[in-house]
Image 1: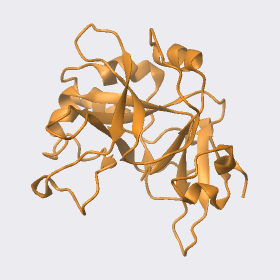
Image 2: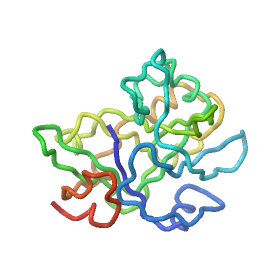
Image 3: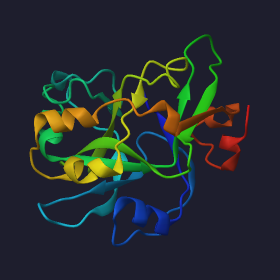
Length: 219
């Protein structure tokens, strides 16, 4: 699962990392939570430019589509998005990237669970794989983050991790038309553990209303 993440990088670095012509000034976020507006990179038409838009994090799905509980769906298992009716069309035509500089995972076990912050070892942005849905009636445009099995670094902490897309796969992933099934499936793999670092952080991040540098204070 990926239920919180951070994005504190300056606009020029985001523009360079994601091949964007323009990035608005974004407030540094240390505890991005579901249902909030989040920056999303999309390509809306074949040959069109990449663009950054704010979409709500969390899809509202009807029970018949497999939604569980009353809240929005914030994660989708990458192993089933190509066939599951709730995500199949978005996987074919509405793939996106969610920029981040790190994400949080909480260790499985007795409460209170220990939070960890995971980021790239070199400090570069992470591109989390996502799908998006257009607005409908009273529902705004929204997105979901794809997850996969954890790599060896994350496995002791949690049984899932977000799919992280390599820059070399951005064009293929963002193409607004069906792509080669095998090539897309190859993107949906655990990110190499050697490229990531993990650090235990304090309990400040446990409350979604806390959104400041203290969320990254070491445990």
